[in-house]
Length: 141
Image (cartoon, rainbow, N blue to C red):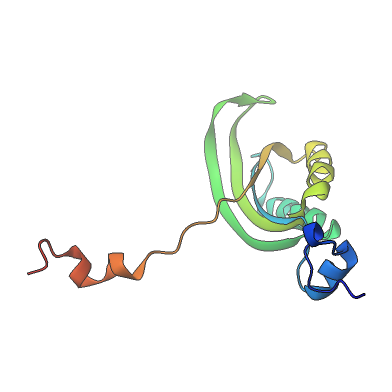
C-alpha cells in the first residue's frame, strides 16, 4: 500500500510527505540579525567583518536575503569602553537547529560588540481595497 498523499495522522510516513513536497525545506525560517561592530575598524575592515558574518550564515546552510548597513551611531551606554558602534541589519533564512551554532560563533567574533537574532515577522501586503480611491470615500456617494 502506498501512503503517498496521506498526512501523518492518516498513517502516512514522513518520507512520503517529504517526497510529495520535494521543494519544501523543513525547519527553515527567516531571521533578522542586528549587529554592532567596533567603531575603530576602518571601512575595509568593516566590510570584511560584514562579509564574515554573511559567510558564517551561508556555511551553516543559510541564505542571506539582504544586508542593510546603518552606519556609525552613538551607543546608549559604553560597551568595552566604546561609546559608538557601527550598526547593521542582515535578513537571512536558516534551519532553526543551526541558529544556536551561529550565535556561538558570532559571540566570540572580536569585531562584534553586540548582536541579536530574532525570527522575522512577515509584513502583511497592503490590501488593494485600502489603496483604492473608492475605499477612502465616506458614505459611498
